[in-house]
Length: 508
Image 1: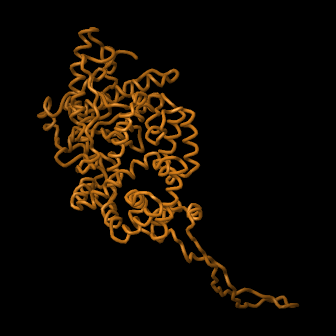
Image 2: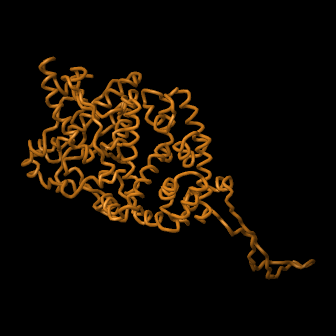
Image 3: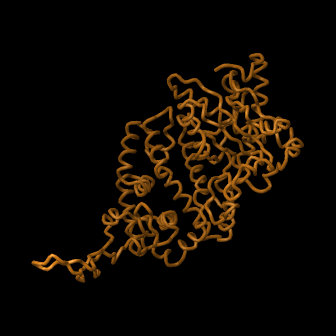
């Protein structure tokens, strides 16, 4: 069991080359890579697939603990009353009590009265039709209320009407019993339903997906997975990691559709992590609380952290208050950004630092980890784009729109109630994707998500623009710093082999 506070900030899975520089000399190829990212998914062995699944499970820590109800939910779920209900449901269904408890934790935080805006209710968030199939009672009764009203009535043979008071009964229905709201009824029924789904689909992972998304969803995904002829056994992990925009494209598209709708393809991984976190709470509540506090949103702890960068960046990271700080750290904690678009696959936007032209050179810096992250993303994006072979597209260097910015300028553009001044850490950078061809943009977004699933970086896309804010996980910064150092040396090596290049003026 993983008890570390930084449970989702996992150490990178690195495959190191032992003999010289890898690949081609016309662009940068790192000698240390993360297994199975992007186009590399096509080469996943069974061992690497299991590792990717473990990384995905770890990465769900943020999705769970960022919610302010995660702590109170753990207290409810592990209480004696619900524990007895979960154990009873386990005896009836054959499913582990910890597994049933984890679903209740994620569905409702252990609250029996919760109702989703989409309709499901109760501790297990059961839809009306599904409740009927589970054998749960949802009973309504018809009642009447009396309404008194005045109407104009004309007597027979008279042209005049007079007001008359009438009373009539209006029927309405009331809910008199809904067993979805009774944990002692709903939990065993849901567990038996999950056990039937597990038997039907041959795996607990598929049962979970069907519980979250519906059986029609699973029929669609399984049918496409069968056509893709994936290696047996066809688990949720193999389906999820067996496709990318260049391989099993139909499968990739249906997975993306369901990710956009409700993240159901990753729900099984989230439940596995919830099981582990609840075990931590049972064994050592103080340890769980410490983990929980690590994921609080510093600006407003009662609000869910909006993205990983808001919990990864600590006050000590926000180091550069002025341009003088950036100047003083040049060549030390800050390094000059690599500038050879053809070789590295990214370019530096002309707008960087233009609002402070006398200090612009200091805005063209970042931490070694940030520059290494850009170089690594560009490499993974380029090779996936090449494998996709989109018609009439050539790879365009990714545009870095922002690197380090001093706090005194950063704060002018932020809402202090919702945003952290992340750029003054030197660990965060922006990519502008407005000018990218559609195929390359798809490749980039896939790579960013994949590196996020593996716990290496966090990112958020601004809703009003084509800009991504990106930062490496604290535990991945050493890896990306190594990539930066390799990139610096590799460029010199390539120049010796091929001769100098014209950098940004080379055409693609």
